Image (cartoon, rainbow, N blue to C red):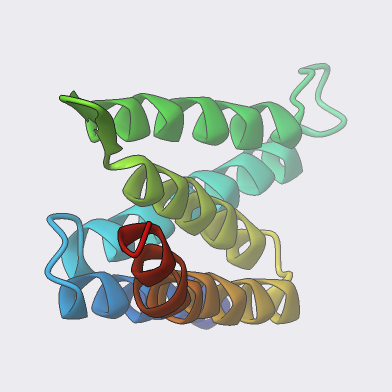
Length: 147
């Protein structure tokens, strides 16, 4: 069981690092460390929730692991709110906040043993951040500047 838990924590950290690497590449403030810690922490909270459920199930104590997952989603919202800034006529940090929120969900997925879901979500997150970011920069923003 301990090997399984170590694997889950490692995998969550790896997935967060992959997303964080893309953010580092773009020189964003939240990068490898931040994304790795978010996925690791959310995975750990999820593992703890299921462990508590297993330990207290049938002992007269009511415990719902989904409440911990809800708390992770809410908690990461506070972190996300802290990275969003309004400057003049634009919003900065919104993509970072959404990325951190997604990273937390990936950590929860790993903690709940949904490895394939976490892997595919990591791929999509990187595709969105790198691929759509490049598309925005090269196509959309170029057309907007031409107006």
